[in-house]
Amino acid sequence: MYRDLMDTIGFVSKHDPDVGAAMKQELERQRRNLELIASENIVSPAVLAAMGSILTNKYAEGYPSKRYYGGCQYVDIV
Image 1: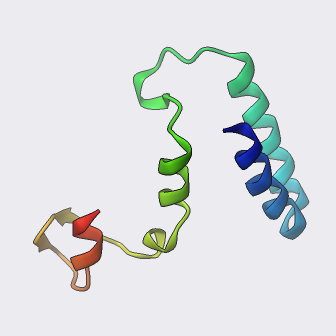
Image 2: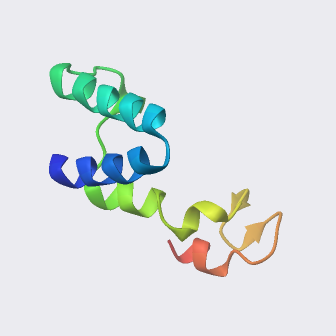
């Protein structure tokens, strides 16, 4: 899992070294600590990949099939 995260951090670091460094520090913090806050649990690599995908470009406020904006048919599937 962490190797894939480091690949992402490396990619970001090439474009913005400061952001990449902060991401690396956050990864190390998560490795060293046990979070007991439910909203800060560690997601799977699949979830990280989906969150960093083309789906991030779509604003989908509301509920599936009852969105405030159009063009959400594929986001609704997810």
